[in-house]
Length: 399
Image (cartoon, rainbow, N blue to C red; front, top):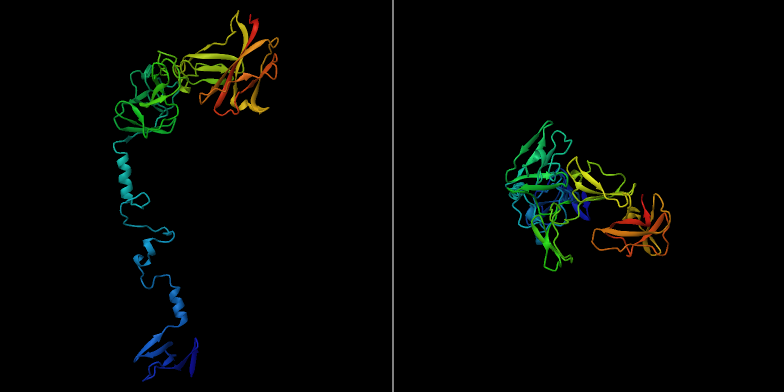
């Protein structure tokens, strides 16, 4: 009986022929194999389904190695999904894009942090005296010049036990996080310094002197790094804590709705010279003492005493200005009106850039006895914080 497979005729036999001739083909139905006689040797032929099954085998039947699987240029084409398996015995990296091993990473990190002795974080590091109501476990780094219970303990770590302050004198290499600005600091043996060199929010700026005799600029230092700023001033400026001059501008509150209290103190960022404007009562105050829990604020509102001209004052925040007629305007309305519109207005803009917006009273709309309009002489209000205003009544005393 003959068998056709893929167009080829095979003799179907139950056993191999005893003396097959070269080129003879047959199918052995007993062992289910197609065979051919070639140069006196009987060869077994693979069936198409067997070949396909071999091609579909994903178990690497030939034991192909990674070296054999490399593409041209020794680069793999596409990502490799490890399926949760590990890559083992990696060498140290040579360039930034190389994969690396855990030992190298650990050694590299340790080398960067060598000598640092990490401590628990502190809440703040700018207080010179204890806070009035600490909670058990609260930690602070004592700032200079320390006063009260903390006197003479500058740079030490103070922790409240619930009944008393426990002090730790830092060793060189101490490192910790300041929770108030999320920046890490290291004690270098004499001071706590920012690790990494960035300037955290609220860092004091030490202004030492003008850069030349004509005052053509300011020289100042932040974290002991020298800087210069080209702004014509004439004369020296001093640090915030210096008694020698006006000092750098301290924190102020220009939109309060009540008078300041003894608790509006250095723990809130206020210092001697800070200003406080109560916009609800049209009152202005200056800080004379910012001690914790014992702040002293002096009302400086003009017209608060007999014989002074009546006046009104307040602050207009940048958000209150809107575009009208192509310029930014804001309306100021008095809580109580003057007798008439015979008053003058002084305006001072507060900006983050130092550039003036030159605010003025809108001359296209006459002042009213109960209101006036402020116009910004600028096409935008970028960098504007607020405009402080004072309205002074002509010839009308407050008594």
